Length: 147
Image (cartoon, rainbow, N blue to C red; front, side):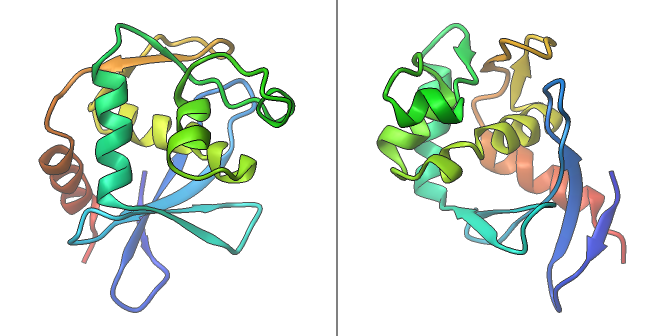
C-alpha cells in the first residue's frame, strides 16, 4: 500500500477488497475521523462520518462474527442476512450502492488491525480486534503518508 497525494492537502491510501473479485480503491481519513472512499470504477468519493463509523464499530464489537452481507440483489429485495452491509443499509444510508461500501470498510478495518477477517473469499466475516478504532486508524494512516 502506497499513499498517493491526489488532492491538494490529503493523501490517499490504495487498498483492495477482500473477496474473490478483489477491487482496488483509495481511502483517507481526516482530523474529524471522517473516512473517505473512492472506488476505482467511479470518480465519486463517499464519506462515512465519525458517528456512522462509531455505530458500525459498535455493531461489530457486540457480536462474535459478523457477515459481510452486502449482496445487491438481496439488499434490494430485503432478503439479505444480518451483517455489515445490511447494517449500513438499515442504519446509516438506505442506498444499496452505499451499503456495498461494506467491502471497503471491512478491508480497511482489517488491514489496520481494528477487525479480524475469517480469511475466506466467499462468506466473509469480521470480528473485533481492537476496541479503539480512532487512534488505530489515524496512527496507521499517519504512518503511510509519504512526504
